[in-house]
Figure: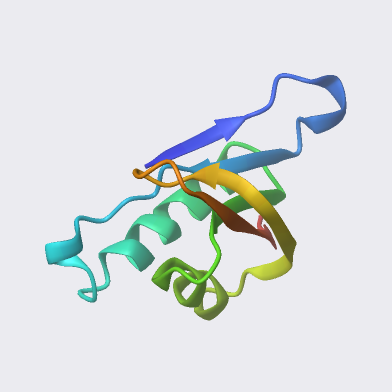
Length: 98
């Protein structure tokens, strides 16, 4: 898991949750939620008040983020290629922390 903080002067209050990945054999055991909770707490501890993230539209991760209190902003079509190089839509989320 990664939390990326911006270096821009107008973005010191926000961070991006990136690369939150749980191995498929371990999914459903609460690990994703635990990792997300750690990311949120650490970002807030470091001064972030707004977090953003994106995930493939229709993925199980969308349910995780909604259940964790994240707000869907919208969908960008053809945002990222899957392993087969097929372009897929991406859903954007945000959450206020701290």
